Image (cartoon, rainbow, N blue to C red; front, top):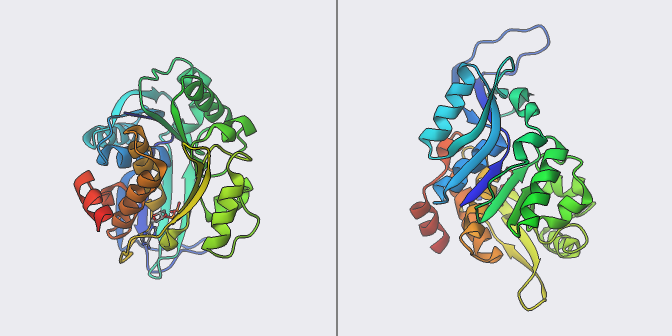
Length: 305
Ligand code: ADP
C-alpha cells in the first residue's frame, strides 16, 4: 500500500505544425485532454504495479475536477482523500507540441496550491510507503515526510521540481529520486559528465543529503546509492532497458511511482530500481502519459529480460 501526496492536473496537449509566436494564432492538428500532474501520474504508476494507492490532493469543484477524479478512480487510485475546492480551477497544463516534438508548457497550479498543512495533519498512515513530489508547497512536503518518518514509514521523495524543502526532509528521503537537472539543483553534483561521475556523486550524497539516492539518467538508466543492511555504502548503475522511445513524457513519474510500489512490497532498492527502470522503458514506447504505463505482468516480464 502506498500513500501519494501530490498534484493533479488536467493536461490539454495541442499538436501543432509549429509553435505560435507572440500575437499569433495557429490551428492544432490534434488535441488530447488527459489526466496529468506528477502526483496523479505517479499514483497511477504505483497502482499499475499492483499497489493499493490512496491519493491526497485537491481539485476544483468544476468539470475538470470531476474528470480528473473519474480518471483516477477508473485507473484504480483511491480518491476518498482528494478535496474538492470551490471557486478555484483544477490544476491545468496547456501544452503545445510542434512537428519536431519541441514543446511549450504553461501550468496553472489551481487547486494544487490550496493543499495545506490541514490536508496532511491527520493522514492515515497505514501504508508501506509514502510518496511525495515537488508540486506542492514545501511546508506540506516537509510535514508529510516528517509524519511518515516518525511513523517509521519508508519515504520516497521525488523532488521534481526542486523546491525549498527543509534539509531534515531531504535527510529522511529513502530514497531521494531526481533526474539529472534536479540532481544538480539539489546539490548532488555540480557537474557530472558520465555514469561513473553520477555514481560517485550519488554515493557521496548518502548521509550528506539523503538516506539513499536515485538519480535517473534517461536512456542511460539510473544510479542508486544506499547504506546496505551490513552498513556498507553501495552505489550501483542500473542501465536502461532497450526501448524504442516515441514519447518520453511521464517516464520519470512512471519510474518514481513504480519504485514506491516496489519498495512498499518490501523489495530492496536494487530490485525496486530494476522494476522502475523496466516500467520506465515501457512508458517511453507509446504516446501519452498515464495511458502508456504498463501493467505489473508486462513490467515483470520486461525486468526479467
Ligand atoms: P525524467 O522524465 O524525470 O527526466 P528520465 O528521463 O531520467 O526522467 O527517465 C526516467 C527513467 O525512465 C530512466 O531512469 C530510465 O530507466 C527510463 N527511461 C527514460 N528514457 C528511456 C529510454 N529512452 N529508453 C529506456 N528507458 C528510458
